[in-house]
Amino acid sequence: MERVITYIDGFNLYFGLKDKGWKRYYWLDLQKLGDKILKSDQTLVLTKYFTSRVSSPTGKVKRQGTFIEALETLDKFEIFYGKYQANPYICSKCKQITQIQNEKMTDVNIAVEMLSDAYQNKFDTAILISADSDLKAPIQKVLDLFPDKRTLVAFPPSRFSFELSKIASASFTLGRKKISESVFNNEVIKRDGFKLIKPAEWK
Image (cartoon, rainbow, N blue to C red; front, side, top):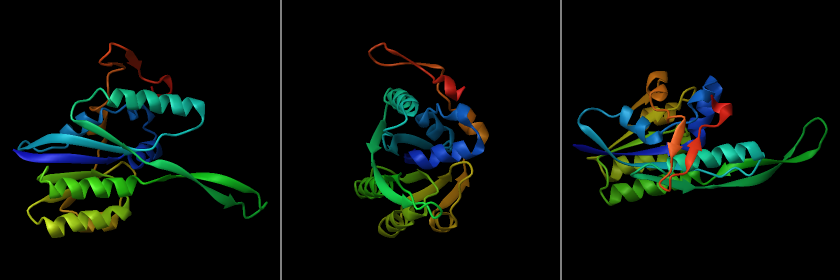
């Protein structure tokens, strides 16, 4: 069987779902989603999820925390955290300065993991779920250094990158059917027996 690792750009996927208005699919079993996009001769050996913890508002912090706890119940699943960086923004009309939070390090973390896994021969095919064109470089490097390996790009809904589609071994867009079939049950039981409930705002 062909070994596959999926690398998921959490915020790229989230905002793709948000732009589609698919809030009810935020409660995604990302390991199941990875399995859904495989071919019959492939096996999913690991799923790597890249995100950052939000710090406000309180409701969003709680919903993200619940979702991450649900993901932590999955086997062969790893989470990698970036961070938020506050950058000043000056309003062109009123000249008021505000702080805009930008998510950082996700693309770097994905690049490091993808290249490290290729070097250690942990996969035959890497599937990247993202449309971030900054990830063109690590994809190209994997293909250059390991010509026997393949890198596929699965674009989140409402997301596309011509640069990634051009450089990847193949690319496609995640469809509604596979996403809808990959949602967690409304209740997810943790290993200690604690019950996680799908946030009401996501129903």
